[in-house]
Image 1 (cartoon, rainbow, N blue to C red):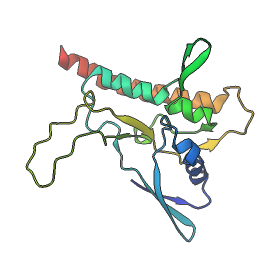
Image 2: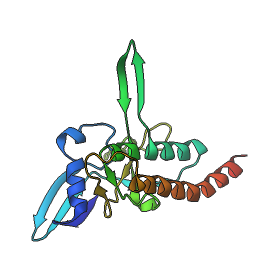
Image 3: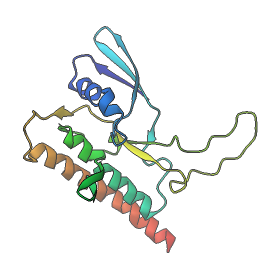
Image 4: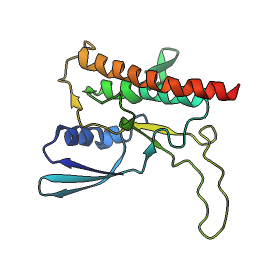
Length: 190
């Protein structure tokens, strides 16, 4: 995936901050990996990991829709044993809000893409037939890709104010739209 941004754009700053090595190594970071950045005049060309449209191949079960919604919103989970945290994570919008990033165009389907790299690939020298992609057999990971209107909230703003609420409401708008497709899947499966 390639992205062209202005060198002075807030989008570039947000993408570079979220691609800092410390954050990049976090397995829950929902921002595509920047593989290479090339500067030309006042433009920066980003080469990012290869991703597909979030719904290509199409969802075929209700669980696949729910997994998409879960990954977009994912909240922190802590598992405690004898007062020691064993696991804690935030993914999706929760991860980005923890990093104070807002303004993510969450209602737009084009704001999300999926990593299908777990899918099997045919060996070039054979005529092996690969079955159609199954989101159950091969885990998928959803990414936020539209940071054109994103910004970082100043440090210390933790009130869950309107930019955070706007992102969550926009997710609701998207989910409301895709619910129509879920109803079709349920109807076809009965």
